[in-house]
Length: 155
Ligand SMILES: [Zn+2]
Image 1 (cartoon, protein in one colour):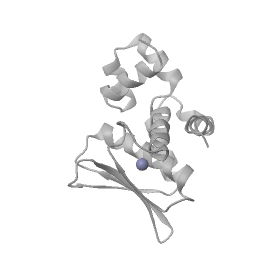
Image 2 (image 1 turned 90 degrees about the vertical axis):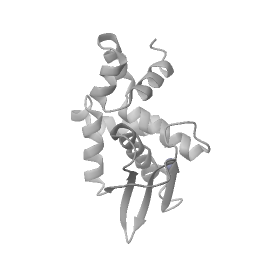
Image 3 (image 1 turned 30 degrees about the vertical axis):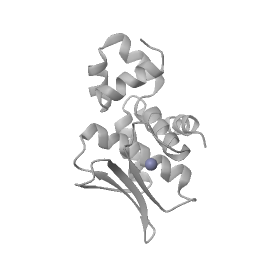
Image 4 (image 1 turned 180 degrees about the vertical axis):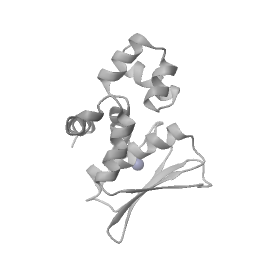
């Protein structure tokens, strides 16, 4: 399923969390029984992983990365879970959020942006607050917010 369609579908399903994407992500992880672990991965470029171990899905995020970056990585890995888990049962993701190579990585980044920075919320927020404030409220980095604003042609 296309990243945007999936994000929209989930936002409809979890409409009570529509204004708080980070809570929606927590609920999703809980409902899907995906376990999230943090680990200080020495390789800085390694953002995270998704894998299945004895029937249990796990997301591992690099604890050397900032909280905002880790959240974006979780969104990214969630897309692998939804869209690609039938193709592979182990994903290792590098430099999540920046220029991705390969359609699976690109789609996963797109989904994470869509789920954490929905168009309507970002549009509404940037009219009221500076990007840094909007970023803080949504739990994303200022850099990710600025990128999203540009992508949505809001500034
Ligand atoms: Zn990935």
